[in-house]
Length: 480
Ligand SMILES: [Zn+2]
Image 1 (spheres, rainbow, N blue to C red):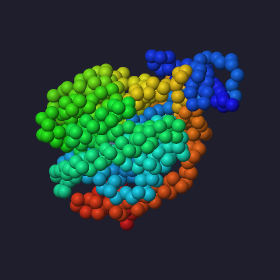
Image 2: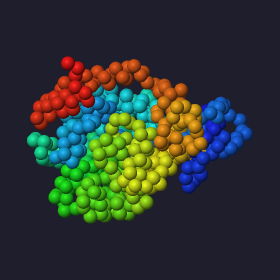
Image 3: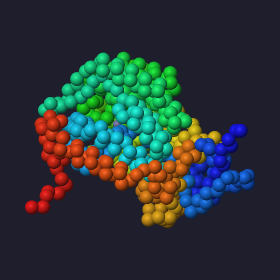
Image 4: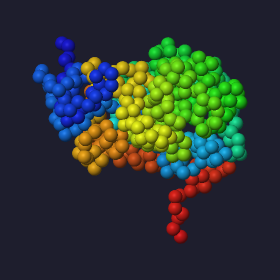
């Protein structure tokens, strides 16, 4: 006998529903789910349902999407990486702080980071994450445990950067390691793409524009095209990288990718903010036009840069040029609520215009923009036929009251505390603000223990042998 999926009606006071062109505000409406799909959106619904959720006191939106994250380590950036930066590297944390953190971290700490981040993402209303990292098998397993939709890009590269003196960055190359990394990524893809009923998909994620050879990038892009999956890499993320690429190729990183032929609608460029036309490079403009011409996505993770004094110039410019701007979280916190807020506010500051980037632009980037990056017209929207990835937000709280315009409240005021319930593919994974599959006390204890093991080891991995306290002194000195 064919099993008929349960039909659930969610009656909500405010629904951000998609009418085929864009998000609209539907007051006092009803969304009907059948299994993992949305089958009806409207003011009324008169047919039989198995269950009715009375959410007339809540706001229903599509789940949020982060198109750039490193959940296998980024929570351990917390309380170490902030407030520090070497002007020799234009304040980028990539060359001194990040390598020390990632090399001092052990494997158990990496797993603790994955568990922490998945719970953190869900309780902040994120239903899909594009993960870039090395802990592929564990990420795939935990995605099913928590019920988080994951795109896993097992990363690889043929070179690495390092500094031996804190003055200059050098690159060491091992093209064979890059080829083997790509081979492992292909095997991983074949094994896990579509796992857990399609909850997990895979994609191709060479690490950085300055650590991959042109051949490796072309081969990875070909694989992504064949599989109809995204192709992503970090691009134009530091002044050091930008200048290195100019010296190597006589052109900007984005122009070099264009020359290689790896830009296209499935290309998701991580960051892409130190570009020609930016005041950080003082180099002629042109990169925005190239990215727009190829229909690329920029995975914009504003917070990781804003905390170093670096901003995209600007979200508004990229968007109006025709680039698909999606949001990323990159590091700690894995919060798309924060990403929306920082994206809007940083763009307003750069443009000196409060209307340049609005709550709608930020929310579109976090939903429709992310879905477009993934090539998924069933995500990031509440519409018949779409996948039921949904968030119910409190309408009455210290940050949501008074409620007149729910999206302005979410973008400019909300916190994860306002997320009441989350559905991923029709499955309730967060209820009353609690991630159902998360053992909170264990997650926090494991992450703390990971940090406690990591900080004392840091001096082994710093070029100058500095301790964690020397690299990143306590905010206030110890009481004597
Ligand atoms: Zn990144």
